[in-house]
Image (cartoon, rainbow, N blue to C red; front, side, top):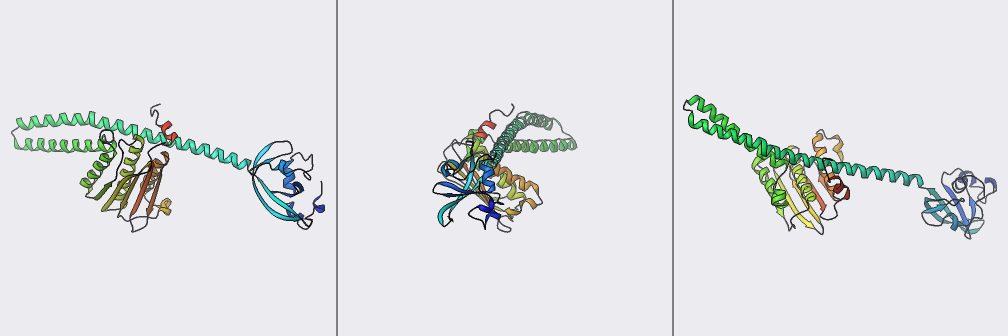
Length: 343
């Protein structure tokens, strides 16, 4: 093997030999020069010379290399024409990417596990919301209804004005509490999603927000083929719910425009408000973590379905949230995560 001082690049040998990347100079299809990194990469045992080896053996493919012992490994290859002893040659810079690919595979595996866990967490949340909604409606709601009936009976029997006034007050409080419990049950899990479909459920929620908070809401719905797949419907509903909550609590919005439609095989949902807005690039420094968590929740719901969610906002210019949710081939990890929330 030629020493560094006897290489055809004597003037450059001092830095070629120190390069961390493997350098091969190929002339007429054979290796004419290999630096120290190349010798270590292709022949770790240092038992044979690389000079004279066919380049097609060492570099059989664009992203593959082969050591002298026959083992193949992935590489990143950069090539350019050069001059070798006044003759044309090709200089190859070879970087071993085996470790990088293994690291990427581990990161991808962890990403998939996190995605599966996120899907399961969201699925469990929906399961618990349905359960709590049923408990509120069936148990607490029925108890309050029974109390209301008892108060009605007392109102007919009691004649003393002071006592009747107390009963009337308690009956009124019971009535308002019953209404609040029913509203909470509907907010936790709107039965309209299953009975009437996504468009009706969104319209109901917007009407309730307008009634409760005085928001000026414009709802534009294009053609949507019902029934929308359940996982897509609940994701769209929750994204709208969170977006409206943010517009009210953090954005101080007075007007909101909601657009629902389909593009090819995806459901599109856009929510725009005239609130105070914010800088999306500075979410980490937002003093209200509830806003950040809400935006992350919306993004995660879209991502679990293989979709995407964009957030456009600026101080003083309101906020625009747009979700694209595939109607077909929802993310398999989400399907797996939603198989059995109680398992």
